[in-house]
Amino acid sequence: MTSKSKALPIKVSNPDKVFWPEDGYTKLDLVSFYRDVFPVLRPYVKDRILTLERCPDGMLGQCFYQKEMPGSMPPGTPTKKIQNESGARRKTNYVVGGALSTQLALTNLGCIAVHVTGSRAKTFPKPDWACIDLDPGSGKFSDAAIAGLLVKESLDALEVISFPKTSGSRGLHIFIPIRVGPTAGEVLKFMQQFLARLAASHPKTLTVEHAIAARGNRVYLDAFRNGAVQTVVSPFSVRRKPHAPVSTPLMWSEVKPSLAPASFNLGNFRTRLEKKDPWGGFFKTSQSLRFAIDNLKKI
Image (cartoon, rainbow, N blue to C red; front, side):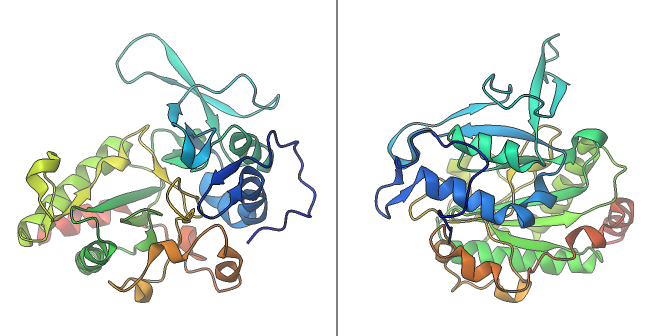
């Protein structure tokens, strides 16, 4: 989808390195993608705490996670110091997203996916969205789609507005825009209670079982992306998966077992951007989580 002829605001190291050998996509293709998609990506990374997943050799090499800001980031890169969860005195200096220069510098370091927290740096640890990660034990997106529609039905019963997207892998993500107020811990607790009830209502197809071996082919409803420094891939994030799929915002009417998530990818995403953004009103629909909590108690 990218136009490599347009000027880039950074010098890309090893631009011709092939990140996806099967498709021929290069590091320059990836950097160009993020330059082109940044206007729609920015609302989801603006002032958000990032965890870096660095894959300097693309599909061919190993990846590693990094929370501390790399010393090679541009001067003035925004950061947020957060106390380590272990309770140790040490603090981690996280990169904060929102600037094109930050995004492209991270991509130049081999960051293929964009991992974001639910909280913005200024309001940490109070998120402005909740999310549910649906992971099909069968490995089939069709199962995640069916489960996603069950989740939507239950959220609708609570009068909660939700937005689906492909994870860019085999699963589905459901985001719920919320008003800033509850802490990440409170959001996590609500989501755990909600998903436990839902799984209990559909024990043959849904589960909140932590042990992978105990899940079988059921769809795992993961609430833990809502932890204070836990992350989820952002909308419009490329994934280190075959054919370079993009985590793509969807309309609920598109969530069908027949949908092929890999059909949204680095090579053809321009056509998707030409369509109306299904998440265009996402932040305008922020809702009270307290309302949802009260409604959950009634059902």
